[in-house]
Image 1 (cartoon, rainbow, N blue to C red):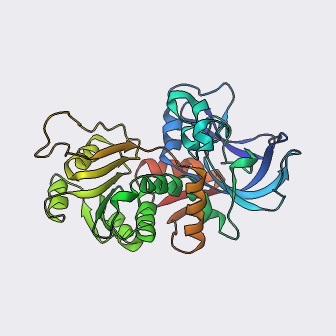
Image 2: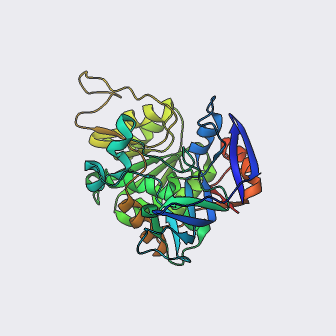
Image 3: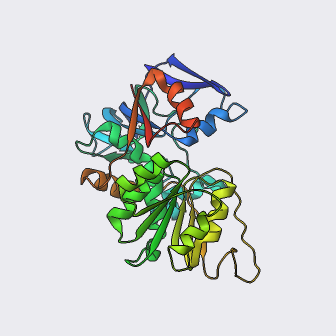
Length: 346
């Protein structure tokens, strides 16, 4: 089969490799589509080899079951589905509580094995997956389904964790209307009555946010925090979802979140919000506000995201590429040229 593989740091090659062999508890999935994420760029730029052999990238994967392991019950060849990306142990305290994304077996890093970030991923014609990671999608289009595995999963999880703040009279700010951010705006619109203010550096991204259900859009700049305060009676946003995570967006979140509000860090830009233990006041961290660094999501979050997509309440803006054009798509993503999500089709 063909697979898009990281062969050396920064070197991505389309290679001919054997179709994966599956074990008794695995499924072999014929890939229908694989989404491209900023995490793939992060892996591409790691200055050392992640493992001795080449690594197939891709953690947003949808496809059709080709073969079923001997010990797997309830799955049959021909089923269409999506891959839940947290390959957790399934038996620890966190897993049995429904918190598979922070599986105890992953230690303090709390990042269970994930396709394309350790095990081989789905930027290929086939992928081996644990049977428990398969989530059916019915007749949902593969190109629409694949990005749900992260773009919807991570957004849904962050939003669900701030659900108590999303009352009918609330305001939610979404920073960064990219692959995750434009999905988050739709999830907020579909699951709450909050008023969404979108923030981005591009006018085209704000137009996308408006199509997705945002009530207002603000071009990011030195006065953005003040503009958010002006629109919230001086109090700030009840919830701020940062899908960028650089210093500027972290500062914006700190300066615009309301007392008792929620700040959710989803973007992995390495930004450092200034949270001090001093008295609240001015632009600093307000009384009662919470901050949570949100990773991935639970299998339940993915199932509910798929349900939103199947009901027509969630549509991913996609740019479609052939598998052979994977490096070009990654380069476009790095330059900020992708609208929504880039998706590879084998």
